Every structure is written in structure tokens, then in C-alpha cells.
Image (cartoon, rainbow, N blue to C red; front, side, top):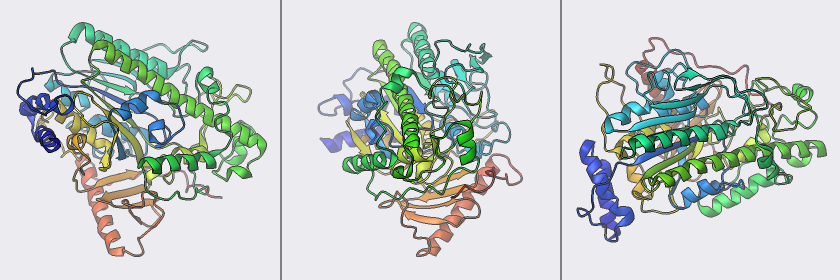
Length: 563
């Protein structure tokens, strides 16, 4: 019986076009029919899609990935759906969102580093789904640099786009349907996460009124918990005493929970306090602009002063409050799906655009030292101590392509189409897989021409097969390049280097996702072959972008800071 169901799903997942859509309906026997029989069911509507992206959240922050943050909505989706253990971003906000929205590596479409408009052959998600009959909506962070407007050229039917990422309580630059909105006055009862979810609910209500029998895509793109650390005071109060034990204890407890549930199987590596972003403020500047409680390194918690411990615990309580609020507001959107009667047949995807950030900078209106931490006039960053804990058990942080920078939670929930409940999926996957997966599940096909041009081959793979069983989706490689950080994963092997003057490292991901045992010196031939393969990808992707000359990678201002 189990074999029959699995084959039924694999059959429909591998088809294309209208045939796939018809098989998709029959394939719902996977989740509902006692014997998996097809043919007697009334055809149903294509699935809806809700794609949720959070910003700078560490792999282990939410409860269902080992964290202590209260995320009951996401935890519930994971318990009734799937958690992927090896999903990858690009390590930075805009290239990751570019991958999600276009289906291409950012380098293929001139988005990393950003240096012009995306090629005319490139599409945005609605362009893939509208031929399948979908209405498309977006609310939140757009951040595809130099890309077309969300509606004018991006294909969305309605959009709320937030361009100001430095004011969670009063953004100065945002748009509704490509038209500028007035700045939010200071002191207004406004919080970006709440507003983003609110607009999403409004768009869904309009869809229900006008297109109730037609499928939709909702791209819900939060800006939290990206700096500045700002959250409603009632959310911060919830975690007031949660983090006084410090980042070392927090990290160990998370790792223990993760190993117990099978999310990871590697030893917990030592923190790397010597490595922080080169653009961070110095220790002296941090004390001057924030106060004596600030810390510039992930030093052992026991080495901090009492004042530093108290201040750092407050910072993590704000970060947790932002993650918590994301979950609450996502819950409003999920409740709207239930109210509409489409919850069972909506495929929900949840990811984070990169790992937690070790950055410590001050932008926007600067930082008011007299303001309460987490309030509108306070400008704080998480910093390397807590980002190391948030990225447990992986090494390094946002912008690095070691696992701490690129590992993302991926929860997929679809009661009408996924039989499994609460299972793990271990196939490596990447944000470029989202577009082909959505088209696959929608029963569509990707047209060979766009704007009269032949697009570059899509690097991603549909994950439809992995929804049925814990199978490995075969691919040639997964490629990473951000700033001067580079990596390539081929099967279970990964090469990675942190900076152009650094040597390649080599790790076996089967037993060492924590990247503790560098095998480069023991396997130089494997390193050489993989490095050549990385360069081939680099050259090919830049050429596809239309770059006649090699694009110089954006360099940090100096080398990563060390003690």
C-alpha cells in the first residue's frame, strides 16, 4: 500500500504541463484516500502557494529547529508537514531573494554583485505561474536590486513593498502597487511585521471576493529579525529573563535538542571570536555610540562584565521577540487561509534569507543611547556572540558561505498533497529550487522563450519527489559566491573558502556539516577538481548574465577583523 502511494506521487511529480496538473489532483489520494486509489475523485483546484521569507534568522532560532523562541505557528506547520535539514540560501538578503523570485543564481541575473538590470530573458515568479491561471500578490521586502517594479514588470497583481529597512516603527520609504506611500509619522501605532501581514490579509480578502475559484501565490517577505533590533515592548517583555545564562549555554542546549531530533549529527565546534565582518564598528566606537554593555566579539560569556551580560541578554530578548512576532503575524495569514477554506490546499513554504548576522553597524537615524533598547530610537545589532548561538551548530555568519551563513530552515506544509506528518527531508536543496517546484506543483511548464529570448537553463530542481519520501534530488552541484566567499557542494562534498586570499577547505557533509574536519590536505585532487568545477560555474553564470568581462566581486572593506 505504501509503495503504491509513493509511485502515484512520483508519477505525477515527474510529468509536465496539463498532464501534471491532472495527476496532481489524483495524487491527493496520498494525503486523504485510505487506499491511494485514483479516478473516482472530483477534480479539484490547483494548489495555492504561500511563500514566507524571514530576514537574518538563524537556523536554530525557531522551536521546530531546536530553538527556545516561541514559534507555535511554524512548529505546528512543521509537525503536520516537512522539515528540510539541508536547505541553502546565498548568505545575503538580496541575492537570496533574487534566487527565490527568479529561479536563478544571483550571478546569472546580475544581482551579485548588483550591476545593472536583470537580463531581458529572466522572469519573476508570477511570470511562471500566471500561464497556469494564478493571481499573484506580494507584501514586504522586495530587495531585488535594479529589478523591475513588483507590478509593472514583476507580474504581481497587488503589492506592498517596503524599501526602508532601518525603521521598524516608522518606515520612510514604502510603496503600494508601485506607487510611493507617505512616510509613517513617528509615534504612529505601526510595526513593519504587523503591517506586512496586514496587507497580505487584505490582498487575500480581495482575492476571495473577486477570484475565489482561482489559485493564488502570496509572497510574504518579512524584514525581521534583521537589524535594527526593534520590537513591540510586550513581545520583548516575554523574553526578559530568558537569556541571562548567556550564549554559550544557549548554544549547547540548542545543539543537544537538534541532535536528539535528528536535525544534525555533528559535534559542536568551538566559537570563532576572531572572525567578524570587516565593516563592523570597532570596540571603541561601539562603546561610544551604544554604551559599555556592548561587545564586539563572541568571547566566552564568563569573560563578560556583569553590565555586558545584562545588556547582551536584553539584545537577544529583542531578537527573540522579533522572531516571535514574525510567527504571530504569519499566524494571522494562516488563519485567513482557514477562513477562506483554502488552508488544506495551500502549499506553505517557510525559509530565512540567510543566517543570523554578526554585523554591528548603525544606520538610519543613528542610535539614541537614552532610548529603551528595542524602541524606535534605539539602533542595535545582534552581534557575533548571539549570531553564533542563532546559527547553532554551524560555523560563521551571514555573508559567509560556510554553513552558518547559508543554512536555512525549510518547512513545507500541504495537507491536501503531503501524506507525511512531522518528517525530516535530508536532500540538499537551494532557493533556486523554489520556482521549478511551484511550476511543477501547479501543473505548468516553463515556456522556452521569454521576451523573444531563450533564457539560460534553470539551475534548480523541483522538490516534488521529496514531498513524498526522503529521497535525494540529484543534481550536478550547488554553487555559492558572495563577496569574496566561495563554495561548491557536489553530492556530500563541499569546498569552501572565506576570502580570496584563503585556501579551499574540504568537508564531508555526511558526518561533518559543522565543518570541523578540513580534509583538503588529505584529498588535494578532489579539491582541485571541485575548484575547477566552481570556476566553470562562475564563468558560465557570468556569461549568461551578459557580462563580457569578469565582474569583480564586491570586496569587504579590509579583511575580516580578528583579535
